[in-house]
Length: 257
Image (cartoon, rainbow, N blue to C red):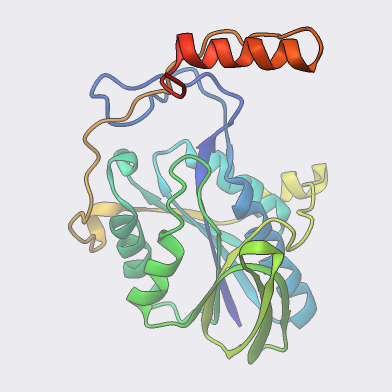
């Protein structure tokens, strides 16, 4: 059995973000980088499936500049067998369809039985790459899974819906799954596994060697949210608070006139 995990390197969400000079994305200067949180659940599920089945190969793939290899090494230390890096220094300029088409150009000839991705990336948050990849490969896809059972031929999964509801889906492999918080608890790479990861295969493929579709969306301008002023603390009994609040709504907003 062959299993593919697609991961993305994203900035630590605690970083201080700045917009780039073109105003189309964030600047990558002075940022700390890490594996996309949702992708960690995908890595864990793929490794658990291999451990369950015994005979399987887990391949981790990422699109991006050279620095994404550091994040890929974490996936290798978590248990992936080898890595495929699609090298693209301008990956941030590509939309979800272009990224999915690049992955499909590689994965289409590999015969993967199961593909795991994160539900979405923490920086772009479009939740599109996984489902677009499934469409390009002609595979069924189940999104936002929070439970996974597989016998190597079919998978039974639960997917999270709005309102806390869960739907049970049973489908044959090959198939693609996008992973949500609650699916599992990602393992922490141990020092011995970190050392082993350094010896695992990690190959780079230039994105120019793969077919990439034309962009379907463009980003014209992004901006940080406007800074808000300090809040007001109202004091007094209920009648006093009501009077103060009404006065504020009249004087400082258009809610009451």
